[in-house]
Length: 455
Ligand code: UDX
Image 1 (cartoon, protein in one colour):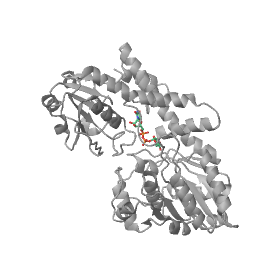
Image 2 (spheres, helix red, strand yellow):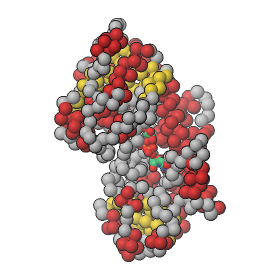
Image 3 (cartoon, protein in one colour):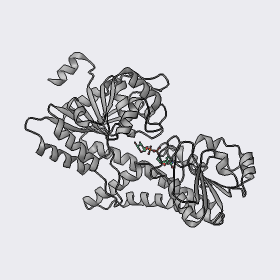
Image 4 (cartoon, rainbow, N blue to C red):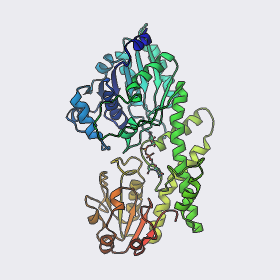
């Protein structure tokens, strides 16, 4: 049997296809699997991205991704194609990492998953392990299973397993090689053991990667559960992280009213190991493709089972209010028609991703109100068909003649800015620092009309 075979030969290298292999999760997973010695076919419907990946051009900006891509391509253990049907036919293990975006009405858009289900029906002939990496609504997995069971010819054998990822954008390569845990949720020992075997080179740190990628020797815990529990671990984790941010943003707001300093409050609270100080930085609200989406999915799941997820709703509502509060601060301090410089477009530093970015929401509110908005970001781009908005590709050019700077993203470049030069360039000297990059007691900062967050 399969497992005896594994035991007999030791580590087994598998044939893998990664569907959605040009996206954030898919690309990192495909390269990661290739560096573990598996033979990987990475597939994506976007032909241009596929062609670019073949010549070492990554569709996303991510620390160490370019060198990893080049390295894996040079080893010939990965290939890129847009033909998912052919890739699945060749594979022992199919990793699904297609997008599951939220529709305008709040529902999850499952069209890409439905398409992959069709590929699976067309192409699976022998036992195949289907690994779900995309954060799929729990009810959608049952729909997928039913569809596969009704369409497969008799004798086709497969298992579905949930293996959620916890990669942070900007740190995704690092997180892949240094996971806090590997969660495997499945309904059979066979499927769980195969996936454990897939991860064995990572667990044993038997990796073929460029030297600049850090790999710790910390033991990686494996969490084995049933399928819905693995999915709930992912939803629960992201909801809890989002909860921490909405919580600290509200504490910061109250701090401002009572003249407390949120940085001291976080320090004092965080010493208690039950609380901790990680992931407690107040800011413009959480953005990105995951936290809001996963909270919304939990609210939907609650509705589905007629349970009102009031707590999840409150986290989301508090987050939506955060950008409005920043907007209000600006309108209180700066006259309409003035020039405002927004520093940072991406939803956080070290990524070019502007999905659900508070910065973009703020720019739209300001332009609509009549401000002239100038922006700068080291990596991200945002265009708006409006004469009142311009993106600059040089930080000091974006600040010249400005009346107010709003720091929205915690890029290192902003922390290291020349404050004397900024002072000279600005017309009126107002800084709203929504990431608390500066110490408000710093002499240079004291020359400005400076507002941090929660202090
Ligand atoms: C998140 C989860 O961290 C990751 O485990 C999951 O796989 C995907 O979703 P990501 O969206 O890449 O990762 O970013 P993350 O670093 O978690 O930040 C999310 C948002 O919260 C950003 O807008 C960030 O600026 C904000 N944030 C984060 C804060 O405002 N304060 C903090 O202390 C931490």
